[in-house]
Length: 338
Image 1: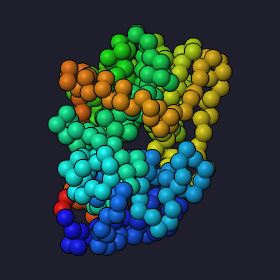
Image 2: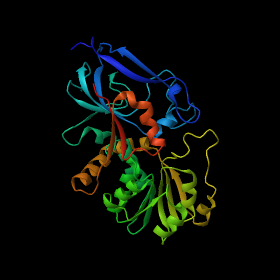
Image 3: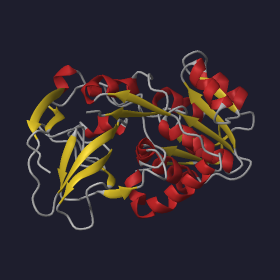
Image 4: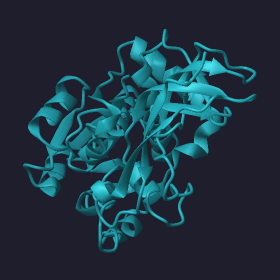
């Protein structure tokens, strides 16, 4: 096939934001898709993952991954279909996952690409429950949180892609699960659909008081996605040898002042507890094992999936901000369209 008539829509980093990303952060570009060379594939991107980690990738600071360079296409997890291939091991018609970025097409040398099967699960699942958020929840809870049957597990950001899976896995492992989320609709969903034992609506109730009521026997594992005041509140309720899993701190990502650290950290000393950060890429060699087990739980009805799909690559800047305003309900994904 030829690429003469294909136009690529791309969102590029124009300038690094201070605080919240704004319209000035991004540049929308359109360009003709180039012909592929030997050792390359042409991918039509169908879905783009929108994740809180993207905010950190915009900062020119030392981290677990290099920042997105000014002028580059914004980094993002993607799934798509190969339209043309001159790369051994990939054929036209194959569906692939990878990090092709916020664009409609990608010419790739295959780095980071992996085949996916749309017959085994819907394509968006490979960006959520079977993608980076799913791997984050699986390994963060089981390897770092080490939940034991009968323990109390608290999850913040519980209605998000990571938090919702963490709570469901904790239930599978026989734990009492308490979710922290914003708004009655999300909280009711956690109880009715995902089987959480209790929820705390941080937008409409006092979190510390809610924890005291929902966790009469204290907190053994806390999976933290938000940081800030909620982390401080949970630290007042932890048990002896508690495990605090630091996955994210979405309440702090757009700060223009220094990140707020936990003022109640001495509770870790008193309770001989540990607080440990996780980065999902550390477990890359075991992704297939986790995906197989999660897929089995889905088939058995033990794990339910909720995706929040927004239509159109043009929406990217506004869709990204939904994460920081608590507007997404489930895994946030952009459907690229034609």
